Image (tube, rainbow, N blue to C red):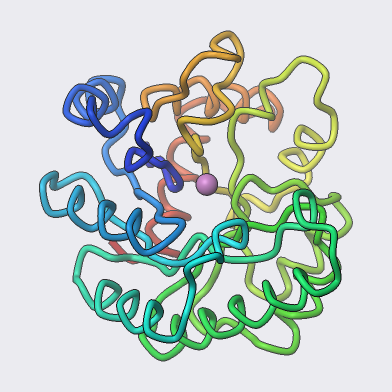
Length: 254
Ligand code: NI
């Protein structure tokens, strides 16, 4: 099993990274992609990837964390991204949930495009954060294609948009919300998702799956999410694991 999107570089988890990684492995999670959200957290992700064979890294500036972004900072991201344990640029994208101003959206787009160009230059896939910004994300990706694949992490758009994103080459990452009792759309999206485009993630420390909702999330909960995916898609757990593993390897080439 592979956790394609986790933040063990988050201060809530970092001090216990050793135990958290051990627990992940003993629960069958063989690979983890630790995702940066700014320069510092990207550095930490790469350091963790050097410390642990099973950890890989993604580096980049999250749309909520653009206060320190600059061309110089992006040059530093590029240096990190050339490391052979970096498997993606991310997480990058658009967040209109927390940012409502047109000027903020415009700024997010500028840095999203620059980081897509970086990913294309380095031949890397992209881990995308798109929140309440499905249409703009789609339009931007149509105009600035990603050459080496991308995942819409914690996919929260509609099942209809999935088909359109899939035509651009998207993979879809599912996590805790598919297990939440009252969540309908994430379950519909899992149901509708093509079998060759689905990957699994925790996005820890956030959004722990049921029955751990409200607690600190960890990669060791990946099997809980996979069980739910298997149930929704009416397939065996083994098949769900096999399919999501294969897709993650296809996308991240590790
Ligand atoms: Ni994340």
